Image 1 (tube, one colour):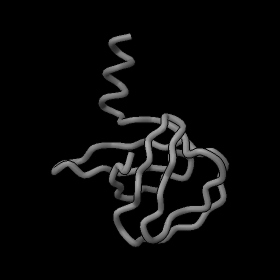
Image 2: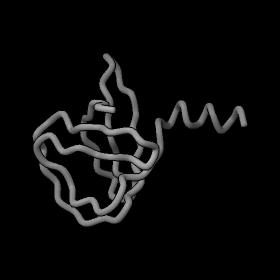
Image 3: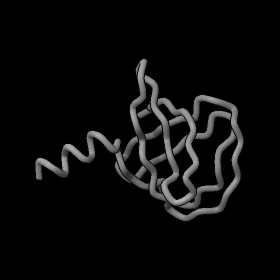
Length: 82
């Protein structure tokens, strides 16, 4: 159990985006299964079509966070809304 907690801490928070995910654009919001809501920080655009994709939220230096779509290996900066 301790190893699992440590791995989660080092690897970030893993969850899934609820429902169909079509990518991100300007200020896209991501509602996760764990109840958290995150919003994209930058206007980078990327289109896809995925159903309940797994995501990893990681804290970076200076208090910033990234959201990586695990199966597509795509990352964008995010901020937590809820």
